[in-house]
Length: 105
Image 1 (cartoon, one colour):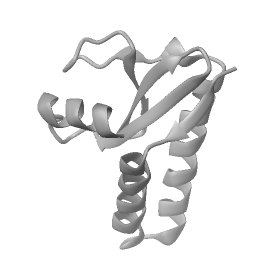
Image 2 (image 1 turned 45 degrees about the horizontal axis):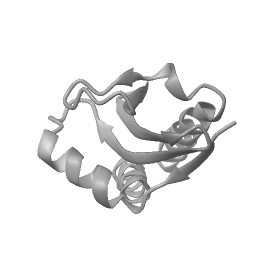
Image 3 (image 1 turned 180 degrees about the vertical axis):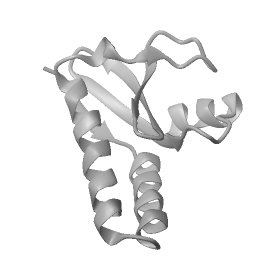
């Protein structure tokens, strides 16, 4: 079983998602955040379940979808997975920005 670690970027992304949704509904903001965390933590047992991020095509950088959000993660090794970013699927994900996030966490 792999350990899941959230980067500062991923935590910041989730906080921004919660703040935005809570403008309409605190209840739904909490629900969405809970779903994102649950989906990310499900990678502990099945880290390769996500597809390779098409913008990068790097086998160790994958994504799972939760609602409208892409949870992008890196399989560092069999013991650790880094959640790199949580990105709204309607927004374009720029390859150069994603590569920088992977390097700096």
